[in-house]
Length: 96
Image (cartoon, rainbow, N blue to C red; front, side, top):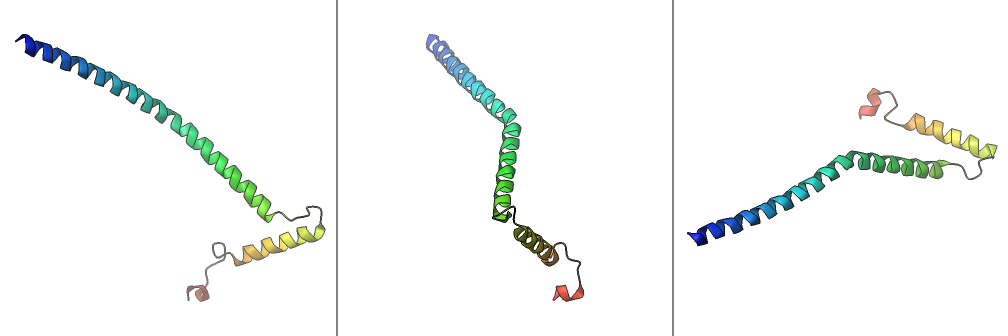
């Protein structure tokens, strides 16, 4: 009988330790989940900024003061707008 009580007590202590460990892990996961929206927002903002910076550097003329470069950029932009299928009105010739 004593052995049975002793074994039950040992198992109870082991379960208490495991429960404590699980509670600690759960608290850690909860903290991480609560921080996640802010981290996602920061990551998206950084990616947007990096994208815009890269986009501006790629399409910015080499000499910003040059009237020719500005005219060329305007021409490219207007040509790009005219050829964009997403903004062009649908016509019967577009369908094939």
